[in-house]
Length: 554
Image 1 (tube, rainbow, N blue to C red):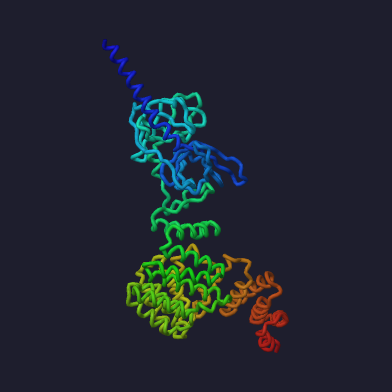
Image 2 (spheres, rainbow, N blue to C red):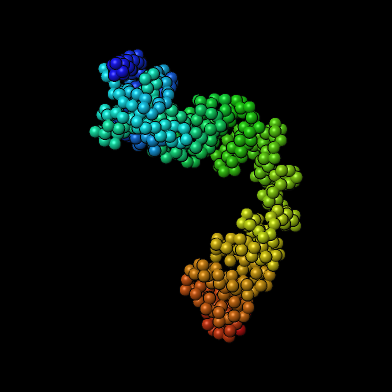
């Protein structure tokens, strides 16, 4: 009797399951499709089953067919073909892709989960009288929340990407490519995981998405979409980036960023009228009008600075300055004030620019950069004392022992001190710079410091530095001429002759080697040979040779 009851129970379970299957299978067929992808030549690249998971054409399938694809279509159960518009996400590890199909409406499957031991059915592309049936043999969790199913079922051919359904007609998994056709175990990745795939601001650099040539959707949120534009700018080819901007403007017509990026592209193409219209539209639509005015000022400034050879009478430095001032009036940020200083400097209005920098030096932008930029105003005004005082303040923003961040400013002060004739102070700065940038200093640096050392009468240090320059560039005849000149100056005539002879050997058509060779020989008492070389220097156009010839020919 007990056995009879068990048999009846099993029969009832199978009957319920069969009835359940019949109740949802016909509707579920409308959600399943065949995916086909094509290469650049239009040839079939790959195919898989897939299914809709959203009402606006959102579908999921295997990722593998998308690798290297240029086009893709889906074919529904009625045989209608729809192109794939864009990718919505991809994961190469679990072979899952999410995408949008160009259809006005789609019938999605409801997403659920399954438990170990529960019955499941594979829903194929085309409805069958009897669906492949199995059960969940094993359930594993990945990425802390999603299920990976091992299914006791013999998987039909070409079923990868098919939905794995529970007895309520909900999709619990996306079928994976089987390890072998004869295997009685197959595998499915969580449908919830497939549905969770999203495009983010950094997805443009995702290897899986980059491996397919299909268009990628923009993120759903504005801030992430803006991040996409930022990351794509410079990392994508111009045609792709232009299309991305157009998509952004369509998706977020009230955001200024799309118009600003497009205006930049138009400006680069010297389409200034179109850029002007886009910038005016950006200012019109945005709530953050100060940022838009700032961007417009920046665009005009860069055009006037770098494209002055292409006039556009509606743009000028004056307009850029006006836009920057408008931004400050709306929101008095220091960055908007700084923009005005930069524009004034470009207009050669150095005193006005300096007055703006004085404001900035009392603001939250007080920094080494601001002191340095202010010093440039005084440099252009030939006010050396004020320039050096500002550079002193600039370097004072850093404490000793200096870090590498201080190096550019220390070098700038060294050059200013050098130019002002404060040679020994310049050498101190050059020494600090060398200690910070020891692996990056070059022959030119040692030549520059050697000139300052000569000015400061630090002749041994100067000889050491010109020797270092020659060690680094042993084929540079100019450095040999400089060394010969210094050696003559300190009375090392034999060394000067050797340096000058090397200079002549490296550059026999230049006068410097002959000039210093002749001078060193004359000073050593070899006047006949010396004068001959001085005459050669004169022949090659050296104006200094005449006076020396007259002096040593007597």
